[in-house]
Image (cartoon, rainbow, N blue to C red; front, side, top):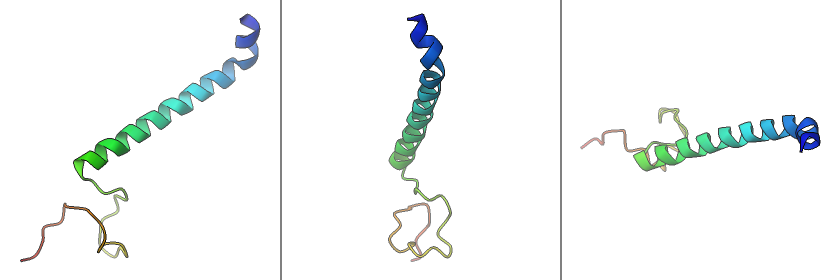
Length: 62
């Protein structure tokens, strides 16, 4: 067991850190999606996809 930790400990720690970061990024994306936030977070002014954007933060003109 000591041999494994000595030779692969750094790899295991870095892998666990990468997995943790990935978990939190995906969790944030899912929470934002459930709240109705858009994925780009850049605003709709001058965006070529503004017509198809499902961002509901803009008030509609009547």
